[in-house]
Image (cartoon, rainbow, N blue to C red; front, side, top):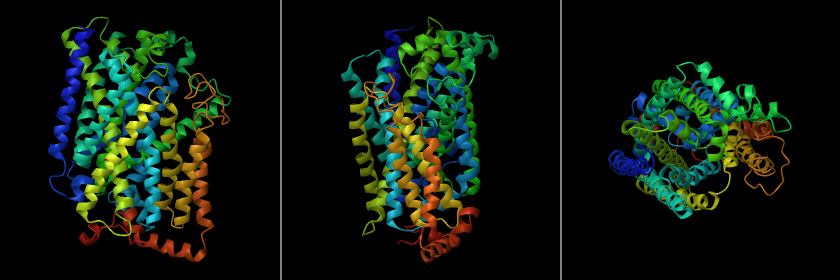
Length: 545
């Protein structure tokens, strides 16, 4: 059963999923005006549930579609990219997760203000959060119309724009109504569906090759048109002036940046204590590791079964490769059971799209409400702050929807890359220095956040993702002056350097005072000292400045 019947089945499934998940948000969202319940869900999630929610926030629709496409088109380089995402989450698990949980309460601004109280720090954290997550939101919102058009058989631009607006409104509702716990439930359902349906597709692909990975790889290499280069490093960056350095830059950016993005780190604050953080991260890393295996098999299987040309024809960036591979796994014609299974795959992707953007809107809204408005000249009451957080979800989501409708016809790969570059160049240095370096000062932090962000924005305009190639965002222009695809090789060291420079240039008296402030909370941050209940429920995790 294919064609209109399958598309009708997908439409019914999508409508049902949207309805059920919205009801879940209403049922699991805060049942009263309690700030901590909205921001953290009172830490009521079990480690397994929280781990699946972390993995759900980590695996976005851009990851599934974009990484799947790179694997299908570039082979080895795509698999290494997928492995790098898993390595990034392991880095968060072993280095940052527990100190982040100990230092923060609701947002990344809390974690940074723990040792450097002051509104300027919170505003800088909010600006960086918005700058890092907005590009990812645009990519996934803009891709919503194309994805649904592809799945449902519609080609009208009006239909695609309507999908962007309707789904964007649904994502805003998830964040505003469900809060942390409501969005966590959606992420859990998404991960169960994504892993379950993906495992079935991967098993079917391996079955088509008699469970012989060697035969799968050999066929994919032959069908790729690149031969053995498909199974060797460097194919993705072979057209650049410095392919090896470009590859190092890309992998470094993903490893340092992916897990430091605010919509992922905010899940650390939902654990009640350090042991739960470790157990939650164990579940998250395991889930992501399984998904890396699944997406690698499906991506390579798509090339083996269909050929690189067919995948590139459907989408130049290969964003439909995961779906094409899943469809090919069932054969030319599908029975009713197989159509149901394929509908489960498409529904999982649809839910991934909804859940991913909802989590990002929630992270941005929480930061805007808690770090900016709640710490103005007049502190807000808990009820007012909660209302502000819900309005902030609309304030963040509405402009994102509008921008997404304007850029949906361009290549949005630069925006995805920009988000990871910002995570690696501004957020990662700020978190590492703030949590572990005693001498780090407020000036160093501001230089890191704002300087690292500015460096990424400036350097990204000169990459070949923006101009200078047929596949760039502006294919008719050529202002390509930066020799790498990502900014990481330059902007990451610069972010760390700016933090060090701002610190050493801080007057000794101010530096000594700020070091004493850190030493006062160092045991708390690094060792998870027991909190006093009055302190735990205080408005600010550190004194205001």
